[in-house]
Length: 373
Ligand SMILES: *Cc1c(COP(=O)(O)O)cnc(C)c1O
Image 1 (cartoon, rainbow, N blue to C red):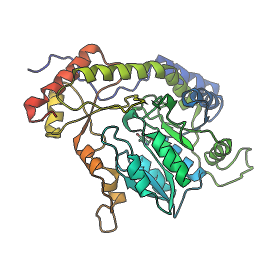
Image 2 (cartoon, helix red, strand yellow):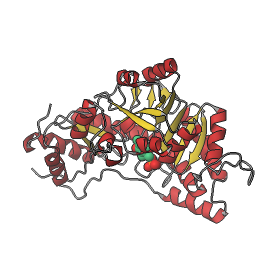
Image 3 (cartoon, protein in one colour):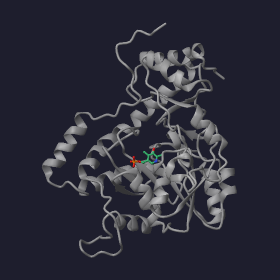
Image 4 (cartoon, rainbow, N blue to C red):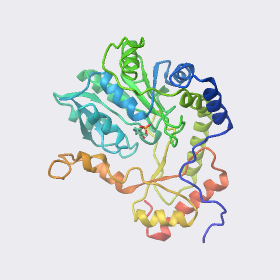
């Protein structure tokens, strides 16, 4: 029976409210628009989210990853162990510094790096491990840090989807040599565009500050070769407003997820590992039947859905071999996830009636060819 609804439920709903607009206007009128007091304040305030680590703001999450790898001295000849089941930005950052990603498989429950696969992939050229806290679920950082410490490897956390996620009460971005966050509009908090690097190492933090600004601390006293990856003060002012909302938004996402968990029977709901605090950037179920038909059915019920990611990175064109075939990777859980995942709306402003409509639509999937398992 088609649900009665007046509004289609979108996949995500970025917030640009009055407070964000006022913050932007205030900065524009101040005339201090690039990497001024707002950026400094945003960096200080963001530190509360990552156990007081040093924070370096940049212009995107991709820049955060790229600059971190540069700052750690990772480049040509180096390999970085990373998941293929992620947004391409993770591997792109590795390639952009001239290093090579080594793709390893994920754990089927968390959709994050499988530590056993990581340990097996370490070789003489391995310089770093890049766990991605996918969908807002923390990677198994306890084991990944153990492996890294035993083998003398740096860990760069891709926390672009995981603001406020934690494992055993320790926040993501506070485990590795550095953590990288994104403030793209659809993330759990945004700054129009933007990124943040978090690190416990003051020397690395200083290097990153140089690298984001042409290698300068004092104007025209360039110390090293650097890029321009500065954040604007307008972006920082918006990010500061969003940061004050993040705790409440995260609790809403978690409450929405709990509600859907309790109501969905027509698909496999996302498992949460012991000790993990999932912040549900995405609420991602698995459908084992015809996913296209499932999406069509949801759409007819007024519910958006999305597939992140239909093609694992190792199957994307830039990562194929010269012959145009995938490299020597054996990633069965990655391929299975790419074929089965479906993300449902989970944004904070959803009402109970909307959550019910989402759950009912998913539970109707059994009637459309899709086997629930
Ligand atoms: C969004 C995202 C990035 C890149 O962040 P941008 O701010 O869009 O550059 C990197 N990794 C993951 C996992 C992401 O989701």
